[in-house]
Length: 434
Image 1 (cartoon, rainbow, N blue to C red):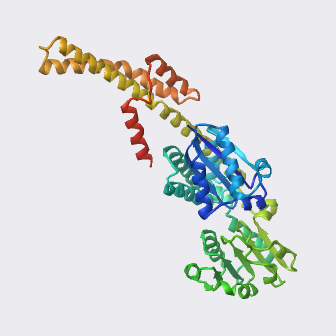
Image 2: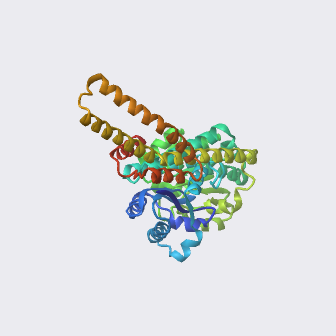
Image 3: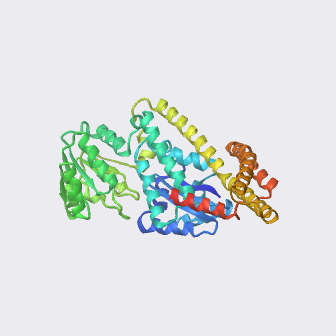
């Protein structure tokens, strides 16, 4: 079984296409189960954010699953395969591990080093766990990816060299409005991105913050955390009229802010939603500046990030390379475990059978003498097996490690899938990893 990634991101697809392919809520859960129901898929997880949609799967067939996952993305999004396929990428085995570690470390983000991706990967992991589509392989891989992401932020300046999309958006707002202190800000939505936006505004010295959300109670809770006030969703147009800076990120499927709701004047709107919350026609209004994921993708963020970016990126790439090598080495070593257990199980069976024959032939061997003979035979077998089993585990860590386990199976006529001992080990490992 190997890890496969099929997906698209801001690096391979325009935001307009990502909007159509992006899934959330019940649609995300449905896609997750549709992937996992494939006969060649043992485990599945989906990372779906404003910048990427990626299906991670543990598979025993490559081409069949790539075709099936691509077809499911097409069906769920309504995007014809001929339009979708050119923007998809596929990573397999070692490349899949490297890709996930790079994503978690922030190297593949629109804004290099942004920390939100860690939470998004963790959310994907939690959903797969809750839906029962996660097993030992993906669980360990994703947990390690999260550790790599944390290490990257702790040991380098990647989070300072880059910034979150919200931080970048506020730098763009300063270009349009000047200093943000004293400005009135309107936050539309009360989810995780909106909460981050409100908190960032507060840290930037913006004290006049209004929160609007369809569920007023959630707007009230968010407003309280930043010392702002909440307004009813029906008051959105009126609140827009008094706002200098607007940040919108809702889960709506249709436009929330139309051009007719915005009064032409000096004003900045940041649309972080996928699909769009703000009608792109707002850009044509005199004095109004609109930044969204598409415009950021097309280059508006150039020159916004802090210094030290190149050095931080190089340091994180080094960490990712190191962690990928360590993970793959440990994973290859783990693959030989069933073979080693099978060998020891077979040897133990031979020992017990021979001891049984000895007792039947020489029945007068009893008590302490019988125990001494049994212990001596077991020690001899253990010593004979110690060196080859240690060596095969060491050799298994190399890229061609599977060949050594295969050779051991051939030499001793082993089938690691058959012995009860192997099945018990695999079951215990699965329970521990979960």
